[in-house]
Image 1 (cartoon, helix red, strand yellow):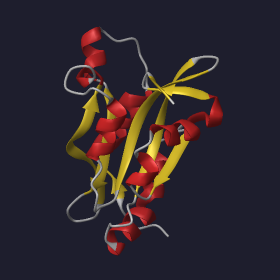
Image 2 (cartoon, helix red, strand yellow):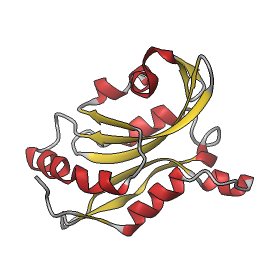
Image 3 (cartoon, helix red, strand yellow):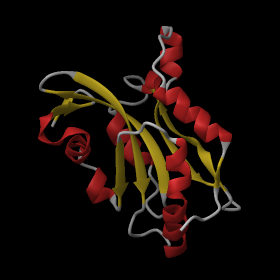
Image 4 (cartoon, one colour):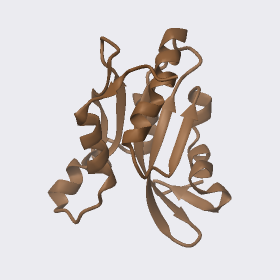
Length: 166
């Protein structure tokens, strides 16, 4: 069931910026988003970029020690969100980077919020063409351990995520 919610152009711009790996200067790379949250606008009519809920590549090693843990801390405990996370991981064969679309719907979120986010998910997913990994998460227990994301990315072949062994 579609909710009639539309996707703000800024959301699409953020996705395209994260998806395209053009050769960049070190300064441009620092501004690249590592993770970003999206929420519904106050009137529940649009999916928008959530202000100040992001991690930039340049933050890592500066204000952010571990990007995965910092990302998990951005998620609200009592409401739903959509997120894009640019996962850097290693398999036994190679290093990889993939965007992961996450639908965060914690058990403690209000039922109305869960319903509107669930029914609006297709609207945002349709705009995110080429996403290989989608993950619905229903609480901190499902996401706090990085090995769960490792499994989503490649099963038991993933040996590290964000430089940390699994």
